[in-house]
Length: 273
Length: 273
Image 1: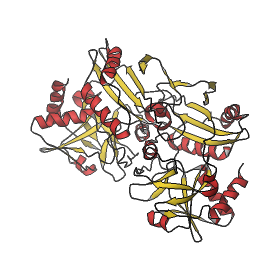
Image 2 (image 1 turned 30 degrees about the vertical axis):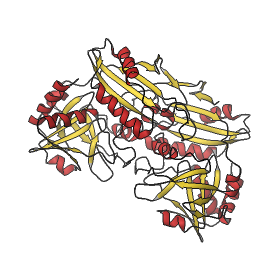
Image 3 (image 1 turned 45 degrees about the vertical axis):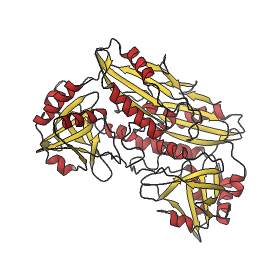
Image 4 (image 1 turned 135 degrees about the vertical axis):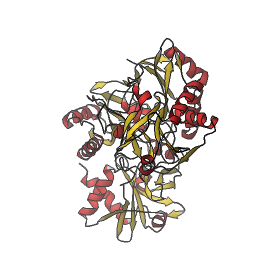
């Protein structure tokens, strides 16, 4: 069972006219909890602030968010904290109200149950049929309009497939349903550009920073099935799972973890705040 | 104040973990109420059924929906009924639950206050900066992922501008933030194709049927600013407003209502169930 605070009060009920429900008019963050603390707090708050700026949403004071997060996370050895921020009540008409009273929802959940060998021996990944549309206005944001991810994740039921990769409408590989993707080939470390669709993950940025600190430049660009087939290593990232090496995708087997993946996983783990 | 039924019970509170909030995982319909009855009921239910099929959502029994709608609409001379259908509770993880318990929300609102001359003398319309992304998986559906419309509607505050038209990422004119568009030029009646983005409105379909009944074929295709500038008449449609002639757009003035617009408005009014 989740424990939830909405605008600071413990409750499991939301205003039925909230714009988050009616339009997906808001943003979210998903943080890993370890030893009673949300990890990568500053990076998540910075992304939330950037999203608020792009959507014209008022950002709550960081101290308030942190206070509420601490209330929920305290005493949890491991778990997940979700922060949802919406433009608040107003269920008829797209026009944002003049006096926005945003809704701030924080909830904690048990850590997801993934086989421990996902991180140590890699995961099998499929290619999804559902494509990511191009929407420059929303690209990169972790907003609440997530139907494409829902449809993609509904495509498979096989417990041996840990994640699905999604292409955009032009056939570029963009990301997993819940993770970002990195591709290692020789000396090159690449990740899909997210200017037209996709979510710019906090763990993705951590990996890019860790690589830069080791003198490895990450190229953001277009990657297709051909580039993935030719890769030496593939890995997936998100704030909850960390790094997962990919051991199989589209009939190809990969070193899992490959040497660069292992190095970056260790660096990210060590650098964690 | 809205009156709301959620899964048949009067309440203004929703489960805070509903997938409608967390992912926009659902659909909605907006119906005009006249003389205690929701208008175009069958057409709205048919669109909802089509949307459920595309999203893999269970459709509630029509009799149940109608019974709840009648409870809310009875005695209302004029108003708006909103039906929201979501994939129900489940706030962590995109994967739909095995046993979906959908959320059915029906709410009634007062009719929107629009100047009566909008329908009789036409409206001034602007061009929005926010573009509609291409998402074939979701195109045409009245789903809950509506951030692009929210951003577009937030662009202007001038009460003399009744609606904004949106282009897609290639510059095709697709629709208004809350309405569909028709373009009359000479003998031709055209409306933008909605295969890559946009909402296939119930009133749009009514107008197409009314035109067909009068021997006028509606062409669905690509329309740009050039075609709008060269048009004789433009009009907007949705289930709540009916038909609004456009009298001004991008520095061009149009007959409002033009003769074909007036004929179709009368036909749709007469044909209404």
